[in-house]
Image 1 (cartoon, rainbow, N blue to C red):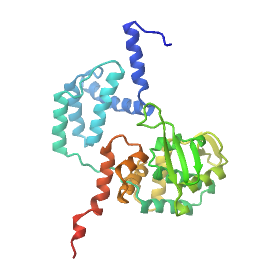
Image 2: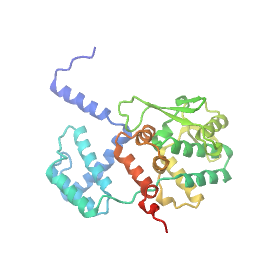
Image 3: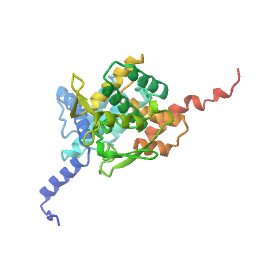
Image 4: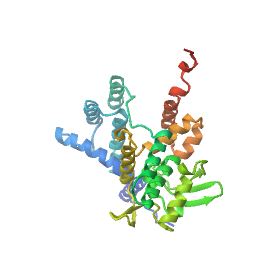
Length: 318
C-alpha cells in the first residue's frame, strides 16, 4: 500500500508529477515549443511569461493574428500556454473574456477556413507506390519504403505510431493483419488498441503483403519494425524517426511528379480518412481506424469528400 502523504507541499509536488505524466512525451515537447514562442514575445515586450495573465495572453494572440498564423495554430498556442502554466503549478484563466472575445473577433476578421496540407488520395498513392517500384534503390529499401507508405495510409496512422511499431505488435491472421498499437497521442492512459488491415484484391497495393515481404527480406524477428539503412544500404538496428518518414513521403511525391510542398507526413492519415469518406465509410468506422476521439476533424474529412460526391450540380443535365 502506498505511503499516505499528509504534507501539503508533498501533495502539490505529487500532483505536478501526475500532471506531467498525463501527457505523452511528444505532446509535452510540442507544448514547450509553443510556449517558447510566447516566452520570446513576453521577453521582447517586457512582460512576465510565467505566471502570465489573460490580458498579456490576449495581446500575444493579437500579435499572432497579424502574422498570418492559422486559427488552428492560434488555438493550439493558447492551449499550450495554459498547459505549461498547469504543469508548473500556476493557474491561468484561458477562458477569460479578454481572451475568448479576442479570439472571436480574430476569427470573424480572418475567417477560420484556411488552406492546409492536402490528403494523399488513392490515385496519387498509387503513383507513389509505382514510382517506388521503378526506383533503382536496393530491393530491400524499396520494400521497406512501400510498406511504410501503405501501412501509414491503410491504417490511418500518425507518423510517430508508424515508427513506434515493433515486430511483436504484428499478428498475421487468415483475413489479414492485426496491429497492436500500444500507445498513441489520444491514448494517454496507455490502454492500447488493435487495428485490422485486411488483404487487398491487388497485392501490389496491399499493406499486408508488403509487410510480409519486408519481414522476409529484412529477417527482422524482434524489436523495431522499421529501421534505418547505412549509406551502403545495410540495415541497422536503429529505429526510424517520424521526421524521416515525412521526408521519405515528400521525396517520393517529387519523383512521382506531384507537388510535394502541398503535402506533409500527415497526408497519409488524412488521405485514408478522406478516401474512406468518399467511399461511403461511416464516421464511426473511420474514427475506429484513425483513433480520433473527437468527431470534429473526421467530419471535416467527410465534408471535404462530399464536396463533389453530393454536389447538387450533379443533378443538373447540360
